[in-house]
Image 1 (cartoon, helix red, strand yellow):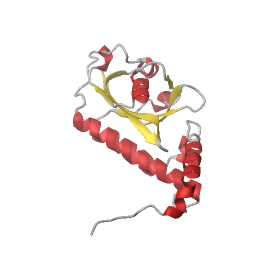
Image 2 (tube, helix red, strand yellow):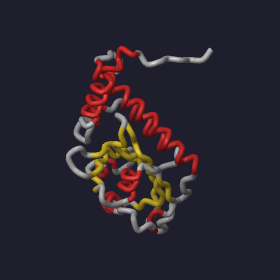
Image 3 (tube, one colour):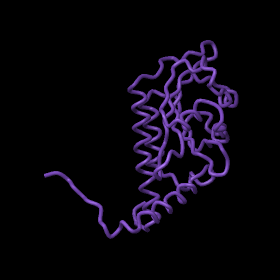
Image 4 (cartoon, one colour):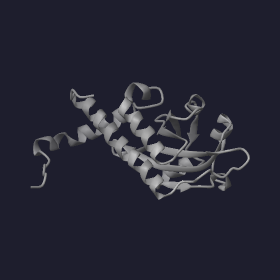
Length: 196
């Protein structure tokens, strides 16, 4: 027997109202509110995904609803306090390219790419050797980016090992799981469902 659950037609008339409310609720998840919204399971999904991808650290960037930029809202690296104050303008850099195209990106010698914005490296005193960036969707739109990096040392800007397709799949899987967690929590809050 296969699991089948058809939409209940009684709820169809409320679909557009729920979609509108979901969009408005999603815009409330910002740098200022992220720690109130996020829970331990969300942080674990991110950390486990970055670890499984063989990343040294990772960042969740969310679009700023008031400015054309992506704000770092989560980072699991040793310089998280510096990274979390940074915003990436949507008109430059590879992270912004992934956001605008909706296409995932992976590069192992990223320091050689002229499109790589080195502002975070300068701010943290580190060198990004390799990077994966995947679009992050919730509430039916691309609203952010997950980036995972391997850091290089100052003597050699090449990453120690580099990323592969399995690494990309791990970060993409983390983004998909996080999408479901975000959507479930937002919908639960909107309809007053008791599970948090």
